[in-house]
Length: 101
Image 1 (tube, rainbow, N blue to C red):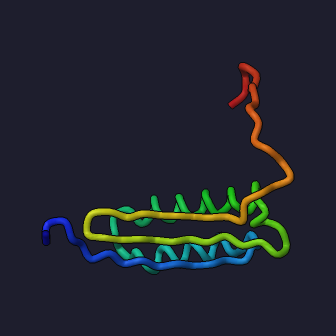
Image 2: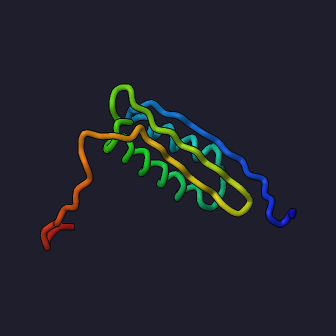
Image 3: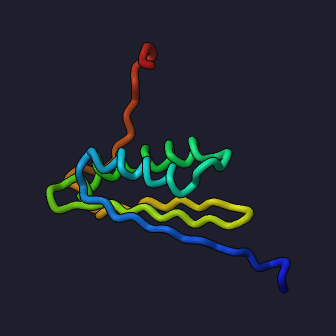
């Protein structure tokens, strides 16, 4: 059974829905992961998902929040960013012109 067991550590952070909280979430991830080789990628993922939560969901409203969870084991890192859901806008497919970047 031991080969299926691992030491899982889990951390959570709840952030009010203010743009400056993205920087706090990045610092928090960096502090937890320290010198792990994938720390830069983890920081980028949290930054992107947190920013999306603030821009595209109710998390960016005055009473909003977003939540970050890191789960780290010997073999894996799981990153979760959850938002407050609902928004006044709906996703839509855009068709950029042929010269768009």
